[in-house]
Amino acid sequence: MNELLGVKHIVMSEETVKEFTRNYLKGIHDNIPKIMDVFFKLGHFFGETADVETHEGAAQSICKLQYLQSPYSFWFNI
Image: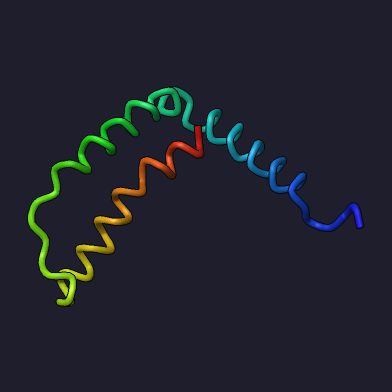
């Protein structure tokens, strides 16, 4: 039972990825908080979007949502 995938393995995997990312990105990794801050601030400057009931508006809505969530993805990788 100890060899099955569990929380311990996921935490170990996450720590391995974090360490690899820090080493691979070197100085860039140190600037992630600044990058996140810019993404948070840019989220306030979206222009008008089309009605979500249209194809264009639906696509814009999906893109905007993904963009607004991006700083939170960075947050978990620090």
